[in-house]
Every structure is written in C-alpha cells, then in structure tokens.
Image (tube, rainbow, N blue to C red; front, side, top):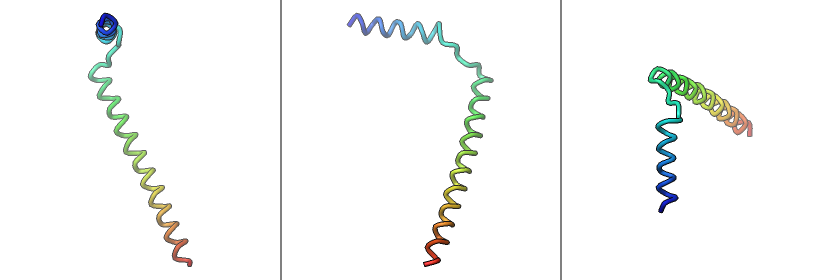
Length: 63
C-alpha cells in the first residue's frame, strides 16, 4: 500500500509543479489547428473515396 501512496503523491507533485500547462490562448490556438487539420483530412478522404467509387463504377459498367 505504501508504493501506491508514493505513486499517487509523486504523480500529483509532477502534475502540479513540473508540468507546463498551456495558457487559454495557446489551448484555443491548438484546438483551431486540430479542427482545421481534421476538416482537411476528412475532405481528402472524401475525395479519394468518391474518386475510387466512380472509377469502380466505370470499370463495372464496361462489363
């Protein structure tokens, strides 16, 4: 039980005193970057899926 208490104590100390937490402005900026990147990746995946679908339809219609 002593090891567990030591682990919790050290974890709390690290989170409170050693971790550099981002400011609210930095957090907002990072969230915007993640959202924009997610939309761009979603659009690329959509374009690839649409292109592949149309290509496969064209191939199937040949036969």
